[in-house]
Image (cartoon, rainbow, N blue to C red; front, side, top):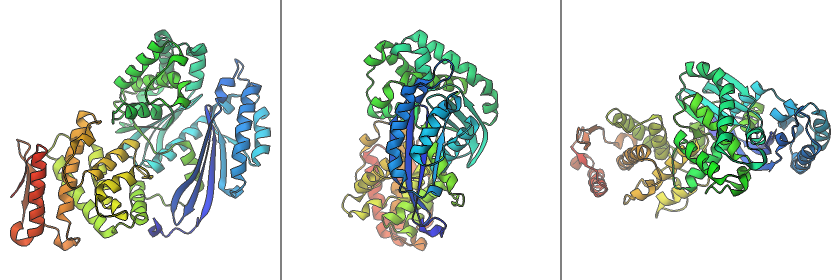
Length: 502
């Protein structure tokens, strides 16, 4: 992103610390030439909310756990300029009546002021963190389930439109409805019912904004996605999956017996509480599916410090950063991306298997399809997919990044559809269409000149046969491209589809 021409934050380090109700987090970034690079992440389970008594007094054991964690954080913070550090505390320290028993020694340890932010400010920062890292389309519903509070926000681009902070959290729900680790259907029923009393008050308001997508910010949603991926399911979170997980919890009877493939060990002790809240949110707000965002509160804090950070399209920034880092030809990348998007739009006008992700992931895969050339030409599609599975791609959700990675791996040579076996049927068909568009586009731009790209259109007939119609006789005007397209017709035929040149 050096093309941004941004000089206010040249080679500086910034740190954000989030003193949450379940975990304390610290993230350190380096800002260079307009690019934000994560250099360190630290997370420690403190479960501060578990130490809140009936009168909201924080017990000594919880205070000690928190201070011991901050002693570890303090060492790294010594190397960051004080002006570039921001530390915030959330729900538990908002509620604690003896908050000074923690804050005073904590500030001494960190040698820095701690800001206890309101629930509304927490919600605003969470939304900004999501918006900065996961570019949205239209109105977006954002949900973050914390240890003692849950933030729900609807916004558009970088602007929150309506937000609320609810006094329901995964740690407090475990203490209240799953006491001593006992798991039962009646416990879930009571937890879900109580969550409804908090959420339903805002249901109509959120509904008025007609949001187009829902993003979950880490925590419980991330744990659910980890479970789905480990079990071979590449899909967004859906209510049916949540009901299945609830049944597994009830069958376990006790938290010590809970064994769900893919559930991180660090989340097990509080997972049922967060799951109950997530189920209530899906039910009350009529959520069809939820994807995972690329950031949350900490990212909102960090980008908030970079007040002059250019707020251009985060997806474009993420793609441009990888183009520069891995020496992709930017002109060719843009040429292929433009053609793929235009052809994708033609396809989506004629196909039932399109949603708002289709153009996004097709365009991104087209822009990054030569990523693997950084390693070598042979099997560069596989090299590119490997790189994408191990680097950050700002502006895209977790599921979108997975889809882009798989498309890059399938953009040339033989078509191996087993790569898509873990996707649900609708997503799988959408990816197949996107992959076909990507492969055709890459062939059409292979002369690497704008003026040498054949002009044509994609038509899909009633029998789902794809027709490529060109303005010129391809055998005469572009014989090499014509030969490659004919080979592609054969490869797609072997995969079970019809592609016809006219």
